[in-house]
Image (cartoon, rainbow, N blue to C red; front, side, top):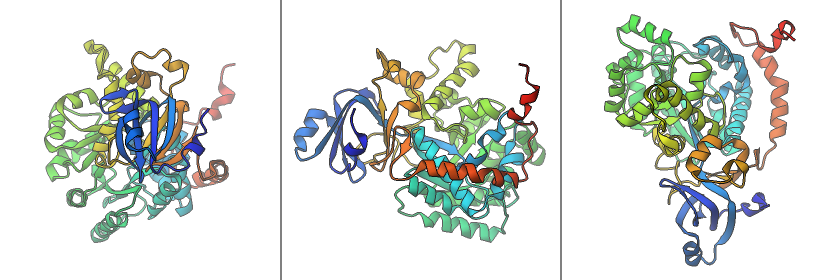
Length: 465
């Protein structure tokens, strides 16, 4: 077996010749990629590329697929310490669990949570994650530290609520000054990309919604918010404004190509037109719909209307292959079965929604999401010498239906090897896990979390043998 650590100890002027290369046009055999300066420099037939660059080193990987890394368009890096606390809980868990938990984390616990989440992302094949903003008190920079140490590309949002929903609420001028500083802080950073966010529309005044969205647009960054996810939030907006949350965002001028809306599961036909006409992007979070949502976003209808969207986990489960499977499966269950649609977008749509389309929705299309000349070398090496891919008749569909993170042999960002067979290169993940096991319990015990149900483990005495 190829020693991937040795082969990719340096990727400068390296030709990678995989058995299959996943391009925008689909998987191709016989192709190769030249890596230089952390980017895809050239793509051509393997023999042609070798002839053009006789001095380049060669990595031949006939049993591997080289594909773009997955992009999580919506996650929460500082929720990893309490993942299973929300299982079986009713909707709007952010009010009873996430806001209290995140708000109670000190700087060190924010860092540990973010680093654990980054580890999970990379293990699941995500080379990029879009964080929706931590509600902790002023420790956003620690997310950047975790990203740099693990090698995960991240979009880090600064929450700009002025009406609640986070650990501390500053005055308007302070919020806007802090937001401007956040946007400038990561200028030119190779892995970290700033963003601005408002948790949910009702957590900010109309002026703040409009101004923060405009500030993000002016800086070439994205503006994030959670919209039309739960029925109670839709009803609160109707009572307060006479408009649904998405309608209200349009009314105050907060939508546009810079805006990334998380969820949009409870959406009307007229609201779909609003998304299309404003160029607003959507994070379609299928696993979140299964685990805690009220509905499934109509992603196929969004695609038909030309609405931009990408796949997101919402911090549920960091496994890129299982995410694309869930994305297709939920469209089939929620819409395809009733209409006799046996394709539901076909396998290519869901792979693209987790890579190239996700990069576009996240404002990163000029940097990552595809294997193409000039883009950052963010990619995966997937072992396709597996029973799941034998015999192979349609690799695209097989990746959606049979892919799993244990088939990912290597993960790269900016051309650097970050992970081999599920474990990181260059730092001790086992030590991190041990520290978190030791410290997470006390941190959670001090948070004012309100659960509706006891844990399943606590009910063990009442189980029927």
